Image 1 (cartoon, rainbow, N blue to C red):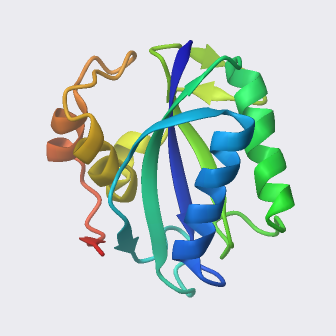
Image 2 (cartoon, rainbow, N blue to C red):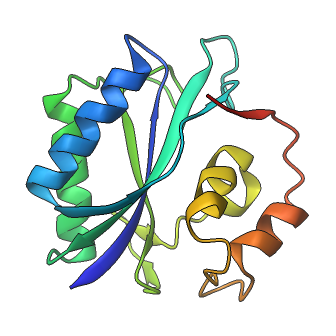
Image 3 (cartoon, rainbow, N blue to C red):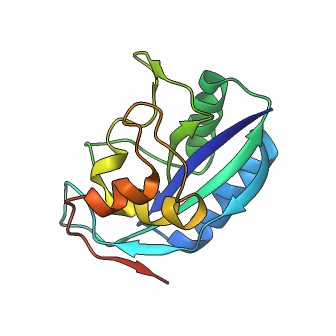
Length: 159
């Protein structure tokens, strides 16, 4: 059994309901949802002329491999009607694998841990809520340390 740390995000439709639906699909297709962070609201990252995002981190116990988990996440996004346009565009659901155990993977399809998570407060704040002492397997720093060092200035508000 593996442990996947997954970030959910949405800023179209009803983001809170979209995150709830994604969590139900993850439970159905990936594995048992072990822990769920609070919901956080943050201004959009990158392409900023769009509604604020609602984000959440969940921890899932799964028998799937990292690539099978990725495929299941992409299928859930498809089922929920996500349409990919430009990078950082508004979306009704976004599902990203942050960690998969302490695996390190570099492939065209998937990089683990997520390569940009340490730069984004909207990832680190909910992750810190669940696992402040989890150590990043490449950077060898805890989530608490990464959050303290993060230079991102976007406000991340618990809702």
